[in-house]
Length: 456
Image 1 (cartoon, rainbow, N blue to C red):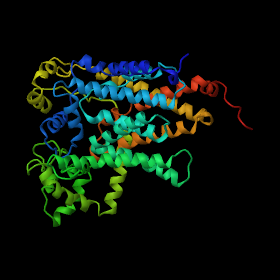
Image 2: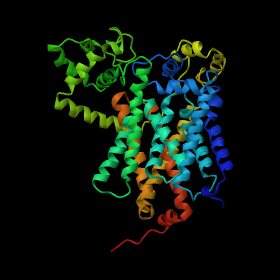
Image 3: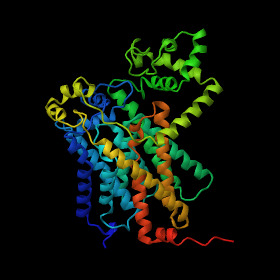
């Protein structure tokens, strides 16, 4: 049987292309790439040069150039191609002895058994979150050609530059590896760790650089504190602090004490939105945030709540993320101005009629992810001595990144299935490849069915 290491360039390219079309099947069924409420802001950033108060410019610029100003289907295609490419390269780098069909078979499993196809073809930078994790793993432990390393580096840089949460999601796994180096654990390459950190830093600095080039100033975000304050409000930590703060200070946020709603972001009647908007009030919110952090008790309560939310978010990957697209919605209104010829397809999409396939994929994903966690647990509990150190670090790195994703997203915003759904397909990816590799060597089956005798 031919293995991945022996595949021809032509077969490899065709396999990646087939994987691309497979990942696009949910969008084909929908009749248009999936839209989200934030899609309109990214389109405005890329096509109109509008600097958002809180979203980076990189993804919008990507959409503008990849679409050739003609079709958003090209954006969905490139996103699916990048996802298929990174899955193929990840499999080839770490599992070169598997059969040649394994990368494409894995894409089939992920498309049928998870929401990877929906996440990949949604016009949002969310598709980059799992890709930058896989790209980092390739750069850290992979022995590959220069062009594959360069491709992984570009994906990592772009992923960090495209969303504010991504640099922090990368930071925590790298911090874990750095701690491992300090404790002299084996299997952590110091130079490659520095390389990944440098690429991540370059991607992070791209955010204010693009903002400056488009006239928004050299800033990461002009409305970062509203998200932090909003999270405090949702976790019921803000009002007790304001009861003390507002006795000696004045702030628009003091009105929160009289409000029943916990929505400071999108409610038109929130203190931020009735007083000039997020950016206009950011410095005022910063004062409240800084004062909140002066109390050790507040920090303790916040740390406890963030940990609780992170654990809950880690397992919250089922729920609606494809919402009905209405003509009075923000994405539709923006696309009516920028891509009017695409409105017919939007109006005839399943998303427009709120008749998508997400619930079926959610159910499939539930069972596949649970089985994958069980497979990884069995693998590491009963066969750990036969697992190469590189594979152990792969699993630890990816699971740490998934927890970092849960911690950052729930800790800055809220618990929402969209955040974890975008990355959870990495668990079945690892399980499928690791189990296939162990079965190939029969070590996994031997460990399960011929356990060692108990020592007396």
